[in-house]
Length: 348
Image (cartoon, rainbow, N blue to C red):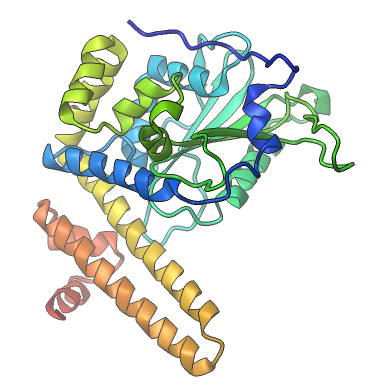
């Protein structure tokens, strides 16, 4: 039986509790959340790998789960957005599963939906390193908002737009909370209470699954069941939450079914491996170039970054071969010839 999450409520002093992180951002100034959150995500990854399953936090699988399970999506949206009235219907605006190419840098919306109250929501599943996450969130929100006004209509008819980033690990080192919402608010004059410009405008949500998973008593009870499904600490826990709720039992069955689909499984694993290689290459090149002021240092940094990228690519290829993917499929995935792939593999 699915528990209906509560709708929004205000504290005794009239503040919306979702906005409290904006007012108390100085409370925590350390990054102690990251190791625990990373470990929680790693435990879940190893669990799914041991069962030969694709983790539900994989962006391709997550989108397929949500587009084929509208009741589950409505439940998740209600728990995160906490609307005045529970959502009862949702329309998918981009249900197709778009392939993600290794060198494709075009921003993609993971799950774009229109709720029955007119709210437009973009849900992004984010795995691995989070580069320029705030900028991406604002860019997606701006694009979503600016495209929501049909020609000839007034600005007052613009809908509430929300962008939700669901992260495997942690992102905000200064916040204890694993779910934070940001809206446009007054920041001047300083020392005065902050006030939201309009609640119906754009809102940005960041749900850090790893932080919620590892936070113990501070874990958000509204999202607890979803955290246990997405990042289970054991197979017994995953089975238990599914046995207690028919909705999660259905999601569990779909994860197993999708994982048994060879083509779909290979696409998700290839996306993960390709993204990992790109992130290592970008982060390594940037960091090395930043730290080394001399041209010689920059050249060494670039060389080391290339070496790390090559190593990551080799590791990705080995894992894909172990999963049963052919040389031809891997070469096509990474936009190289089979001869180039053979050369890469032989250069051990």
